[in-house]
Length: 281
Image 1 (cartoon, rainbow, N blue to C red):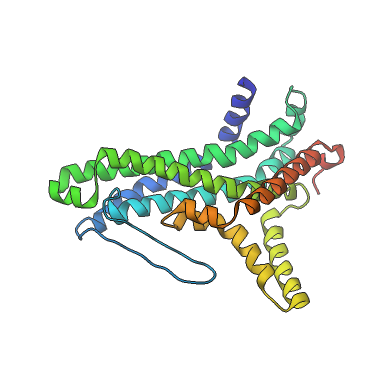
Image 2 (cartoon, one colour):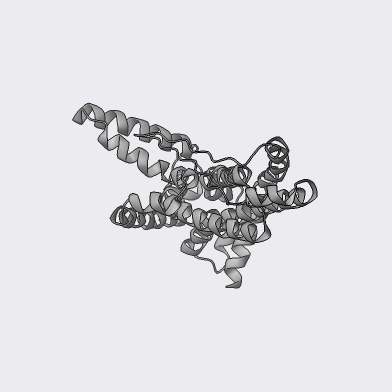
């Protein structure tokens, strides 16, 4: 267990951005609260059909109404941004800086090292984002106590109990997002050991796949399925019901994606363990 904590601590030290960037959420919480708190409680719903469904549901009685929802969405976006900053470069970074040779001298297997990186990306980063969202909500709660009358606080659902409930609901939402991001994270880690620009390579691969499938079949259904896969984390974040979006994707589909993720994880470990891969391409 100590080895796991050491590996996670190493990732935190080497990637300070996962702490610095979410701090912007605190400033955002203050600014958006000042602009919105003068109005009435808001029930906002923006829906569209077809591809790219965005359902922003702010039910009356939830913590701080629209302000709480904005805190939640911004924290989730921070998680996604940090995920796509961290994952494509974490394995490659240790090869470029030579730290991989050091870790090879330690009793840490490739499987454990890559697993620690995935845990950091899919568990530690969202925990940091959720903690900072709680801090933003706490600021909203304090400012409401100081500035708002009691009846307005009740209307906005601003209470300590709702704050804690909001945090647990957000943790559950982040957990579903992490499940959806697992195969993508494992794939980017593997791809980062084959090219200097893994994220760009992944984007180009998706675009070329969509074009090829459309030309071959005359239909965009295959591309739509692919869009649904990589768009699932954001859909979970913005939907009023994260579990509904997650379940509508299909449990069999989730199982297939889990198997794909495990296979890509194994591939990433295998690439990391190859001696000829120690030389950067």
